[in-house]
Length: 460
Image (cartoon, rainbow, N blue to C red; front, side):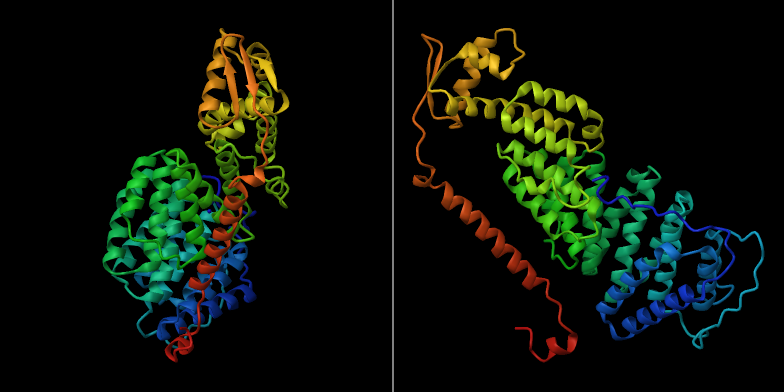
């Protein structure tokens, strides 16, 4: 789903020089090709989506010999596409005579969707084998060839090719090179009303900007782009995550929290890495808002270890211990730098002090400023004077209900009122109700019915 959230988790690749052809895998690929062909003739997007899901299941089983046999089955031997794609596959050490059944429609015109699918298979194989330079060349060639393809089924396949096009350049460390091409492709997709490509390219451009910390440019592009239709749940989750990161940097913490939590909730169950990144940023946004995240966030299955640094950071924030906060920040500095959250954690420091003052005001009816500075472990030279300024600001912002006695150097807390006599419970319930209503409305918009039912007027 930045940076680490959508990185491909490479499985141990199969042997490149294994010249044996697994009949079951080859047969599965033929069935996927048949499914794509049927979807292209009937313009059924659902068949293309199903074919993509089946392809991902076969990803770990792809070998050079299987791909070569599949290319011989789908493409005309000696054609330009066949020659180019075969050149990207590694040569077997031992020549194997593999009999591949040729399709009966070989002499007919090759469907654009099948050609794009062949490029997609080879590109995925090259990325999994960490042949990033070849992947760059293959993806660039595929982008050039699909510019003339314009149909709703080809649009789905094109969106996948765009994703791996960007991924291959990112893994090679050359992501900045394709920013201009992505902008041109997005403009072309908008002109031709290719909705699936628009969503994918919008996210790829946002990721490109954020990768190089160009948050202002990312927000300008996002605000001027077409409204996100959320045709794909995965793309919508990525969009929410990128939007949450942008708003966090721009100090819009409330909107950022909503986007990040929604992205984490709507993300696919198997996308553990993406959910971890969403939760990391959501925890920091909670702290920046002066809120303590729920403990269930840190106890989610397969996330405990990755979220451990942020759990300890939350503990330091909860008790308002500035010294403990500094210790945790130094202990996990490498982790925070890798997650690109170091600057945000520096912002949290002020909220840690405020939380400590709030805890002190609740515990003591009257306390001297010198004792406050000692309890907060302030590292200023004039600790009493700085403590007075910090307490005065907390009173002005409404963080604590107290008065400051400057003459005697005291903080005098007022009696704690009943929280149920305020609007806080109503605000909490209102936020939960809005969250449920938004999820319900998005679920209705995401419903997909067969074309026949829609034509009959069932979807009203």
